[in-house]
Amino acid sequence: MKPTDFSKHLTDFLSKYMSGEKGASANTIKSYRDTFMLFLEFCRDAQNQQIEKLTLSFITMEIMVQFLNWLEGSRGSSHSSRNVRLAAIRSFFRYLQYKCPDNMNEWQRILSIPVKRTEKPLINYLSVDGMRLVLAEPDTATQAGRRDLALLALMYDSGARVQEIIDLKPSMIRLELPCIVKLIGKGRKARIVPLLEEQVKHLKIYMKENRLLEPYANEYPLFMNRKREKLTRMGVGYILEKYVAAARQKNPALIPDKISCHGIRHSSAMHMLQAGVNLVYIRDILGHSSIQVTEVYARADSKQKREAIENAYTDLTPTGTPSWHQNDDLLQWLKNFNR
Image (cartoon, rainbow, N blue to C red; front, side, top):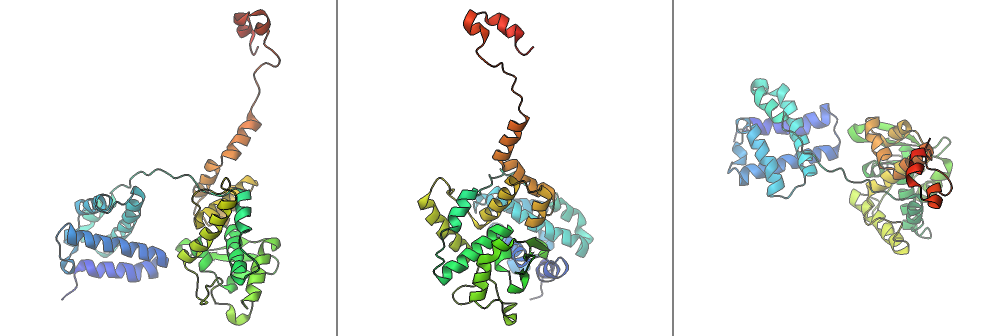
């Protein structure tokens, strides 16, 4: 069967444009692929379309709006998930504007579909004492415990995303002064994050024990499971949850009900902010695209807000016992107040 224009352009978009021209990460490509798998399911089940005969002429703004509504109604997707799918759709139709401009008007109509407003969740992070409690949980008498401590300590010290951590190789770590770690973030953008010598002591022990300091191990995964395979996101999440649960049993007040790998990144950012580190430096350490993204931590830091208010506060109330307590002349006291 001859391929349709839709199948050809979608294949080229995912396999050539996203990875080659745009340089998108494997996770982004997978997310976009999943979006169009859902779209094909919608066309088949809700629109009675034969997938192998689906063409671009069928796809309109109205169809795309129905698809997004189907995600929320039939599949129970949240507004945030809907917006993620819409981002993939927009990327594809921006691509089509150049590859298939004959139907430019329809592509621009699809691109005009608005995102839905979502409630911004509160940033979930650990206090300094909470983070210290979690890092005290791994049993350093065992090899697995030493690996886990090195892993969690590096996640916190570098403020890295979980994918950045599991993609690390020994060649991306410098243990000599000045100590640094090279992280590859979103869009395959590299950044250098400084590490203090005191911070890397657990990492040095772990790397030496596992012979990761040898030249032949430069391109090995930095953190591996028992099969000496690269850890997965799920694997790192399991390791973190194990120690978070143990810490919660010891002191529930210090450990939130939910704390994810990204919560460790949030904790690192909040602690830097509370220590007085400039937002610009925090932006660069976290690998944010703009300072506006990093400002979410300043908005979330109630402690810093309270201290700022306290520092700016001028006490305008009179000291001592108000005279009207003694002579009941409240009206006269109010007239003289703050003069």
